[in-house]
Length: 191
Image 1 (tube, rainbow, N blue to C red):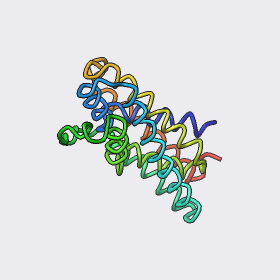
Image 2: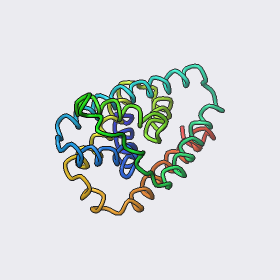
Image 3: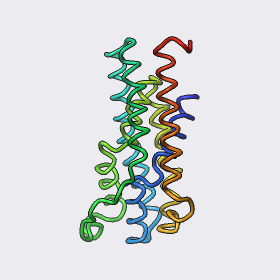
């Protein structure tokens, strides 16, 4: 249960102000069809994060040992620094939804934009740490949905509710805490 809750919290906070959330806002304001957008986000995130959690699980399985625990802890600290850097929405493609529909456009765009994103990398690290593909993928997907569904319904107004600077700082603190926790475990301070 810890892996589900930590994964949800980490990704929900990290996603706020992230480029995929900005993409959700852009899609919502452009197409004004929240249900196909939300379903596209769900399908893309499930696929992307299941692959990421699987990668983390396999990497941890093959690379066990103290040095690997240190690497995972350091990766969380790096994620803390990365969380402080604001994302900008990628250039928009023309009216691609006319050809593919809102659902498919959202699914493809979210899957591709999430590649190499901090929430995907966090999912790899969480998969490695918790060794639970299903719970990590479910938690990170839930975190993505908790952050993106309100963005879809509220559009641009969502970015004005909480200053993104403070959200990025909160995400950085959580990643830093996970990194410090990992270092404490790797050092033998926590058993």
